[in-house]
Length: 359
Ligand code: SF4
Image (tube, rainbow, N blue to C red; front, side, top):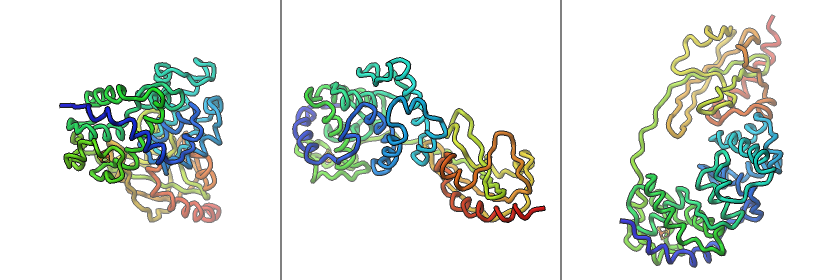
């Protein structure tokens, strides 16, 4: 059973605590709609410390919505490289174009209009509306669900849509009208810095411990409850590192699906025995290569690397040669392939004189 009574006591001590303890962050010191939007999208599934350098670079490259709308896909992806969940960047550009076309280049100021933008769901719309426009709507993400489930001692799985609706409605009822943005940020901040996940909350530092049910009933380890996860699918792949004259071969991933539109080292499922023949690629030498592993939300790639110096520079249509400078500045290679990069750097250097000496 859900008892929302403890939440009535939440706003005052939470806001007081937030005003004393909030971390100083660039999107908080200047909470314009554009900055709040970019920060909220970057912060999805990503820690603040990882986001900070990306946020600064992004704002420097695209200081306004108009700049973002006009960005080239490669420039955008290069700036996003390493942050993961690349569809977020694509949706940012899509939404920037929507704002230019439908809202005259001005960020929309109502919750309902914000919700129509690409890549923006209830949580992000609530965060932007409350922080940048002072609209009293909730912004309930996984952090906030965890905090609210613990304060109320609610033991249903927090990842069910029913629980999300119930807890979101309960938070909506207690948002202080004079400070909706601070209140939402305070709940997020409490979840990020004190009411930590995985049974390790810092209750002795918490401003709401005196009425938190999980704390009072010694149930912080068991709350929140989550539905059992499906095991991730494991995919064995072979990654081909192909070199010629100081460069490595890259190809673009399909426009739809995992890591869509990004550049990658050519790779295939399984052992890849026939791959070079099918691509009509002529190897001159095989070199030692490393292996790699990358964990996505629903799938794990276990990758075997194979490295070759090629006999010529002929590649299948659409593939490109990238030297070290282009790898660093032009092509966005997702971090799924990060374990191969040091080797690629080395072999780019090694292959230049070898290719030049070929007859
Ligand atoms: Fe979380 Fe502990 Fe605070 Fe309760 S008292 S909200 S469990 S940190």
